[in-house]
Length: 212
Image 1 (cartoon, helix red, strand yellow):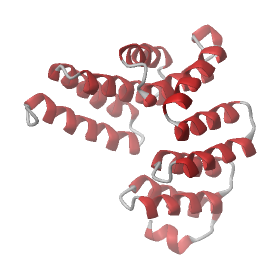
Image 2 (cartoon, helix red, strand yellow):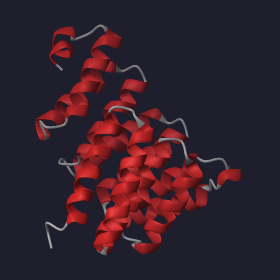
Image 3 (spheres, one colour):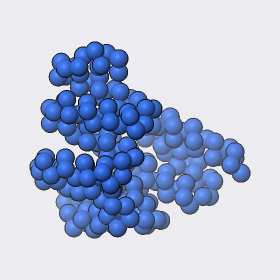
Image 4 (cartoon, helix red, strand yellow):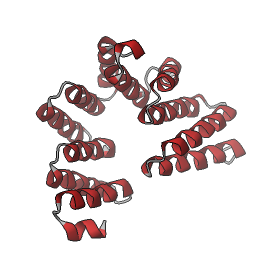
């Protein structure tokens, strides 16, 4: 049933994990996401299970546990090869991990190609990851913008573009990217936080940063 205890528990734990991730509390985010995956398995719904695997894999990768992330993400794509988010996260693992830890540029390229076939917009986003890995900042920015042009509702590409620009010290452009994101989805609290952060770091738009 839609209101089964396992399903309700999964929703609550997934939301708690997202909050912990936003706060930078990776151990809590991993813990909540592990329990969310357990609840998804209880439902027996393959779609929820692969979503749980993909979500936990991405968070585990962000937390720095590459071996754990690889196991989860490879299980996710084996369960559903058409799961775009899992393929993206697995591509990032193969791209960034050293060879001795399982990194493999050919496998990264193969995962990226799957993403391109499934979702042209997200295909541009994985191109951006490849360009970032290769130190090609102009090409990475163009790829993120191509992802946004292909799908203006893609809040992930908009947010990631801002983060990348912020990392380059291009704070005004980063804040513009997040302002655009907020026009698409005003509920994106993470974008508000990043606007405030860039305002402080750059000492620009301080009034806007204070409101954020």
